Length: 270
DNA sequence: AAAACTACCTGAGTGC
DNA sequence: TGCACTCAGGTAGTTT
Image (tube, rainbow, N blue to C red; front, side, top):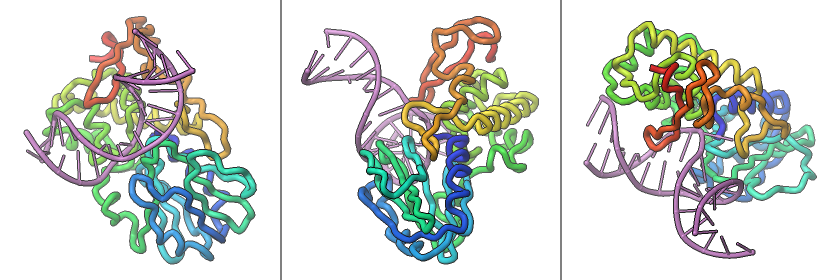
């Protein structure tokens, strides 16, 4: 699924089509997503979008009478298209817009979510306990050192824990650790402050670079306009097991950490 | 408190 | 061609 750069790219892609447009209808074909599609989305009918923003991997759509919360799960995508376009398999719901266009949600695995809150979305149970944004000012070397402090588990699992930092999924965890020269199996609490500082830098570099490229495209992620992202070609270790490290030529390895595939260079990463 | 495991769901790819 | 099997970008909830 989309990781943070894909969600950010989606958010930026749909935003200009939504801001100041009014929702004129609400069509649900398949309400069974990770949670049942919130019927309160019906309250958006007649309302203009005031804001469209991202927090972690959630897209927040603000109206005068509430906030819609969208999560793309593993395989979700949003597209803006003409209402007459035929519905594809796994197109589950759509918002009809006053511009004549439609925002349609596609999600083969149905791990996504369409929620609603009347209050401050930051207080929503699913958002309340999230860690800092990796590209925000709160995520720095001092913070990461504290967050890793007592952890005995691997640094890779720490990075993927949304209480430590949000938005770092399976691909970028491997990529950032490669960039920082840290072995993914290393115990989080036993990494020096200096190396953690490098890691913060690496996470920010890898995410920012990917956002610039328009996100990674693997399997079923498509941009809102249907075009592909280009970060895939930039991956240094992810899904490159058996191939030579671009830095030292050693063979990239694949291991499993926490039931997730993990890739690293045995020479560059210690 | 943290770590390990389960569950949700479909589709692509592999080996026989 | 078909079947059985593994794996895939997330994350909340439960158990150890």
